[in-house]
Length: 114
Picture 1 (cartoon, helix red, strand yellow):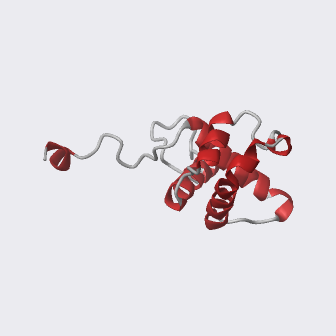
Picture 2: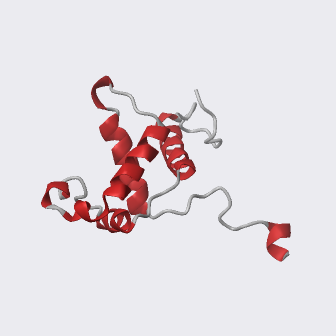
């Protein structure tokens, strides 16, 4: 009951590792190269498709794709991947941080945007 009154400590946060966050953002970059557009739902579908391959992901041909993302690879082999809502939140928070510009760099209010 106390949690309901106060709220959760991690409210508004997504519960994935830094490695999953980086993999999702890099997937977003990779799929949006050279004018090709992909939306959040398609990225989530791509993760589901990868998770459905399971043991095939251990092949050498996937080594380059998962270089530096061993936790992601093991989770996908087991069949675990973030939900579409989490993917949406990760990409939106990344894009907000990327395009958020401070109006006056010396200003004490950092939320002022152009």
